[in-house]
Every structure is written in structure tokens, then in C-alpha cells.
Length: 300
Image (tube, rainbow, N blue to C red; front, side, top):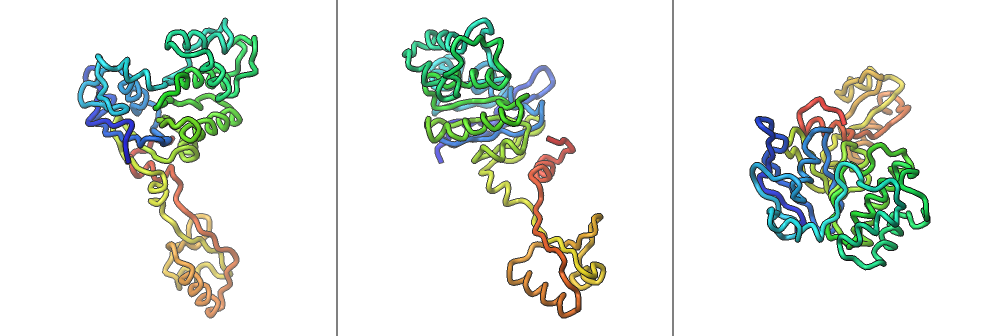
């Protein structure tokens, strides 16, 4: 699949400290790509290198088919929208007045403001000043500014940070809609597994500046270990017959079985006079997979 962002050995060091190390990032065109990692993993620094705000120490970055250099970053950024770290806005102005500044700087038509406000559902804020906006509304205003000019690529750095559950859901829905309604790819960073899981098609996991895993999120789910957990009328005997262990909560743990094997297991226990009280299929959590992939004890 064609990539709208590709990096080769991208690295950034500040003194002796390497914040990003040999990163090979590939964001498919027209997708939502989740850039996942703990705080301090190098996500924001990577995004800044993609838009030319930070110069790499080594490696290269290609955005929308062009290698990012000091000379052409302005040309590339004309097709890129970004919301990195926190939304920048004038609190003494309205949402429309803030976007008017962006519109004039980018030479866009007046209709770009109405379109951006409607996309993020801020068209009814009227004369309300930004200083009176909630954090979620400010995030949406920053997103509206990033969307002006119909970018082919959108970079969003922790866009749900600090939002309440309703605000998180609103931003998540907006991000999921963008590739379909706007035709743009979205690179969204987060330290929250659940958020990336719910809005991304592809995921890259970064830890200590290095890519630990990258690919379709369905393949990450496929790595999850699955098993059956049983409660029976005689758990000790059932565990012996099945050569299984009993966990700390008293469940008999059996490896994943297909339907036919699970049926045979049930019949075998019944013949031994053991009744199955409960039978559950369980799977490893994404956080457990993350910890295995990174080899760290860092919890997201």
C-alpha cells in the first residue's frame, strides 16, 4: 500500500541523549495510523521532525512523496495539517476570528472557515470568546485550524489529552470520519491503548525512541493468547484429567480449543461425572501484548 509518511533510520539526539533512534515509520495513505507509546517515548519529537520543526540528527523522512528538507518543508506543510502538543489560539477572539487569521495567512477562501467549523461542530459558538471554551472545544478549534485547506495528511499529537469521556468520544469519532469524508490520512499519537484500538487501522508502538512493532491493528490483536477458563463440580479432578492448571481465582485454565475439541472435552468430563458450571473464552489484553513487545514494565 502507498505510504504518505515513510521514515528511514530517523533519529534525534540532544547531546548524548537519543530521543528517537533509527525509526522506520510507514503510514499508509487514507488511513488512521495510531502512534502508541508511553509519555517520553519520542512521539512528539518524531512529529516535529515530520513537519520540519526539529532537524533530524540522522536518517530521513518522506512526507506525501517528498523528502523533508529545510528548503521544501514549507511546500510540504501546505498539504499537511498539524496539532502538536497543544492547540494555539487567541483567547480574546472568537473561534471564527481565530480561523480568519489562519485563513488569511494561508490564502484560503472564506468558505474554508465555515467548512472547518462545521466539521468540528463549532459553527454555533457565535460571539463566544475562546477563553470561555472548555478544553474539548479548544481541542476542536485546534483541529479545525489543522483541517483548513483540506490537507492530505493530518498529524495529531495526543488530541484527547485531558478530555472527559464525552470529549474523548467526540474527538475519536471526528478522527475516524476524516479519511472517509476528507480523504486524508491521520497520524495520531497517544499513550492510551484503548483510544488507539478504537480509532486506528494501523499502529506503531514506540518505546525509548525505537519502533517495537508496526502493522495493521488486527494483526496486533491476533497475537493475543487465547484460552478457556472453566468452573466445574470438581475443579481438582478436572484439572488432572485435562492436564491443566488452576489459577489464583480458582478457574481451570485450558489452552484455546476449536468448537469440536471443546465439545469432546465437555463430553469427557461428563463421562467422568464432572459437570461444567461455567465456561468462558478469554484473551490476553492489549496492554499485556504491549509489555511483551517492548520488554518493559512501563504501563500505558
